[in-house]
Image (cartoon, rainbow, N blue to C red):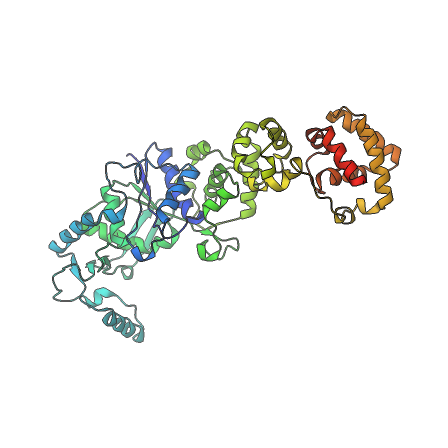
Length: 472
């Protein structure tokens, strides 16, 4: 069997990790089996559609590298892949169901339906539309909702993740398949499209599990074989108590792009929320994820969205980049003052901070002293546990000695370290004090890369000038 999966989002807002994790699993499954991954835009709920939503979907997937084999902008044998452009197809299948006596026009007004719901609530029983099927429904002319007729029965099916799932007949009801505005409902359109587009595996988030019986019932009355169902666990927020959602702080994935997260790290992070390959491995390349992914290793319980782990993973992926790769990724993130410096100098700077970078938007803060004169505030001395031991006069004395030593240096790392360590003994001080003093004076920070490497990259002229400025 050729594996064909799909990602079928609604353009109702920016994609976030909880939504795209399901897309990633679908993509990995298709790639693992040399199959096809489809993108389909399910825009039948026109009231909820957000301007730019479809473009956000495509841009997000492209940034992550989740290319689609069929879909918008690419096409394919089942064009179009945007549901609002497929209305005639849904209408034809709806008419076929009417002819077979399996669909009927809903004659009730909203007020009448509400009255029936309130009656059921007063009688302490669930409201089921099938209990109120019209004995002689009007001919459907498109102005009323159209409902599918489903007979209640218990359902049991094998889910590729959850195993055998059983649900009772109370889950089956006559639901709307075509709305009064002429657009199909999700419950109908996705079934038609998955069948026509030959989808073999449908991955859904856990909140859809109670809807699967009515999907299976619809497949049955249509006479179609359903695809393999795979209910994947929800992505939970950091408390582990709520589903990750836009309402509860889920960040649009493209925000991570703007912050300088690597797409490889995001994919690694999302794949390992609710899935592992049975090993202790945490850092995966995309090719490793493709090779190792299997639905049998997807867990049944929800996975936690842990942004601290994402930061760690992103830093780990940054450290695995070659210097040339890191330089390419860093281009949009340099401080403006770096514009006049050449590529070789910038690469030297990157080599110093690569181990410390967690995301690329940190670049200006971590590197600006390489490109502009630092602001050395008094609190940098007084708030430093080591440097606050020095009086201002002692600071000036130390700086004069440091200046004399550095003027004689050739500014290689080895020579700088050798001369400054001798100066520690000469002054009777500690490395934390002497090196800390130099670091603050030349970088304007108590935190910086290795001191000797930093001094070498800044160069002799710059270091001496900055020390002399503080002496004035």
